[in-house]
Image (cartoon, rainbow, N blue to C red; front, side, top):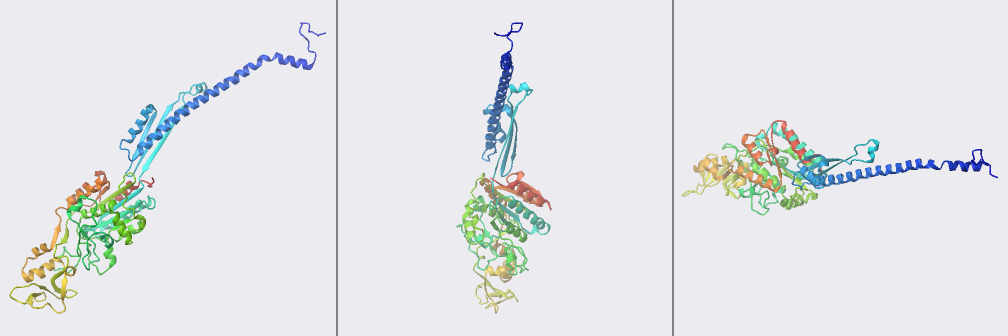
Length: 530
């Protein structure tokens, strides 16, 4: 018989029954917990959706940024880099997201950085007070040119003596260090082209051209260039060219000094170091050798900027690669540089011509035909202390005019031999030859005879300079000009030669160091990497 409470409810009969009753009494309490769990699941799912939308937007922005800055930073890109980035975002329907573009352009590089931002407008996060959920992105790209070829064309004319050459040397050395220290090994080469009235190529470089050497003149290696070659940066290796002989166009009728138009010194003394000090140093990646060349340069003579630029530009032309091969064969250039000069490719190689002068184009001198080679009409002793001039005079056998006493005789002085023209001009200045061996024996005007022997080239040198400068710039060479305490005409010519007014510098005194450093920094701009 079931027991009941007085109110009719069944009375618990055992602990098990009482537990069962308790469980039945709590059936409705699971619903709030279940609803809480469900709410949390929906909330977490909603947050995940907010995050997914945010990440999707961020990825889309990032991809657009990456693609746009890569395109804009390409050195092949001719459009404005910022415009390129903006166009990418406009086409992607994200123009409002782009917040900034910065562009840094240099001689051998372009860097583009861009930033973008978008509010992904969260829904579920607002329940937690998060009103904005911003997708930020940024990207940057840079393209640099790694290969560098430089021709350093340096004025060593007589006006560079004293403080000017002393200020130039450390400036040029620092320039070399900056280029080499900020370049990967084997990526940068420099040629040094000293010039005065002529450019002394040195025997190795001269041997690469069809310019037969005047017998006995191994210490001068200057080649006379016709006007026709200045319209191009190239120079034919087969064109017949003249060796510019050793002769003195400067000193007067009383001088037996033997400075030479090609490489002008007060003293030769058979010193090979002096003779080689102004040779061109072509295509070198050896900073020590390059700086030693700068230290060795000696000054003197006239100024031929056109010749310096012609040879400097030639050493940057890829058509001069056979010249490099010839120099390698002679041990003058290391074999690892056989591919130099590299092809013109503005995205792979930067070619730079740095032209420095403290003056203006003046005069170069050439011996005219008939006085360059072969036997002269002059007899002399080895030292030139005893001499005579021979003229085949009519109706007399006394054809030898003895300089010592001004008498005509039938034979030359004892101990003398007939000299070649190179031997004559090694002993005496041209004007002294004109006086002693033409004016005195035959009455020929000294100045007239001097002009018969020597061609003075000066009237078209500025024209030649601008022709070769234009050819260099058209080929893709970047030309820097430096007027170092130069006169107005010289500054104007070098400014016109430079790639732009921004590529031209005036300098005085120690400023030359700052100018060279500025140019070197523009070329390198940190480390050159591709």
